[in-house]
Image (cartoon, rainbow, N blue to C red):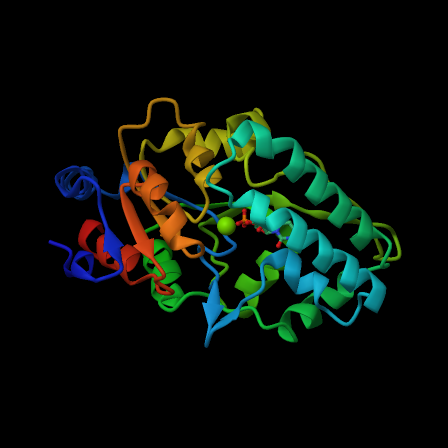
Amino acid sequence: MVPELEKATVHMKNPEHVKRVISALRKEGTDKLQVISDFDMTLSRFGFNGRRCPTSHNILDNSRVISEEGRKKLKDLLHYYYPIEIDPNRTMEEKCPLMVEWWTKAHDLLLQQKILKSDIAKIVRDSEVMLRDGVNAFFDQLHQHDIPLFIFSAGVGDVLEEVLRQAEVLHPNVTVVSNYMDFDDQGVLRQFKAPLIHTYNKNNRVLGKTEQFQQLSSRTNIVLLGDSMGDLSMADGVTDAENVLTVGFLNDKVDERRGKYRDAYDIVLEKDETLDVVNGILCYVL
Ligand code: C5P
Ligand code: MG
């Protein structure tokens, strides 16, 4: 059915369930289908040649527009909070206030740096960001078949949109909900727009009764892509969801987190830097 599911990186707790959902998605056609995806470390690569690739926040953190002192402080925050973010032994309730702390401190540091709107394109161009292999086929397939792609990201919206624009995949079927920057009349960053989205509040409460929420709730067959346990609530807004297929990229601390990921995601992709499996499923379904 989908030869890519035979890849060594693929793990499924219940392969029969996966087959049933994929068959239903194909049978029900394109009108009811949408893809809901995380951005950082899901559409973007986690690593390349043994080195970590940057998240949309890191693209800013590591850029030349940030002072050396600011860069060091942002790195210290990452080293303190990232292990908490991915710790399989802490609950989401425990992690939530700590994530708010991380995002708030990082955004405050970024605000001190007088970042210009007009610098974003160059910051992205000069960065080491990489999208996963197969990303063009992924975006193009969805665009061709008019399937909405809803990107729900706790990263920085302006930065991730620019990454997609430079990759020439920011097609009209793509909607992004993320943390967007607010610039003053001179084009200088003055604040981040509310609400703050972090790893563990990606749900319908943070979306509120927005246009994006309306869009999200109207298509009841869903392919959901994420890399964090927090990404699983991204489709909460679709209350009458019918067929949902969740695909989780397990990038880091694989041995410690394998059990939880296999329990939570229908398909787990371990250390797989490609979108091959997702593209194979879409090719079969569309
Ligand atoms: O797009 P996504 O929701 O994955 O973006 C959030 C990711 O950005 C988190 O997984 C987190 O590790 C990372 N992050 C970061 N720097 C921050 C805050 C979050 O790299 N200041
Ligand atoms: Mg992510």
